[in-house]
Image 1 (tube, rainbow, N blue to C red):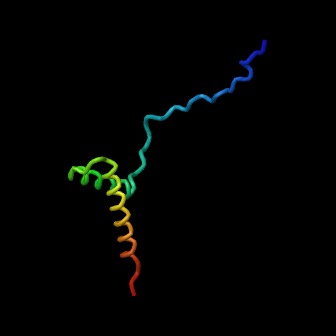
Image 2: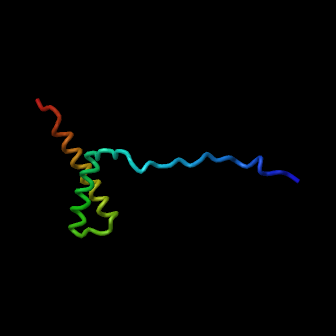
Image 3: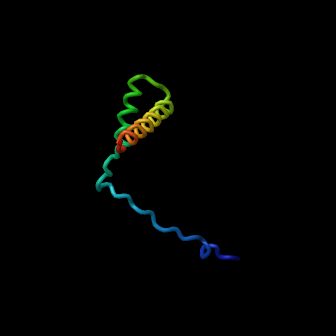
Length: 74
């Protein structure tokens, strides 16, 4: 008879997550998306995936607009 307990894989103990600690500071993207999704929700745009799509397109447009206007002009 073969003893299979010796060949069994040994798993590492699970790491405990700390309940405390500092949260990361929200980025400009996080702030914008939070505000934009709330705005779109108030306009009753359904489903959530549609609001998310519009918000990401809006973020891209705003980011492109701000980067092109921040360049030096002759």
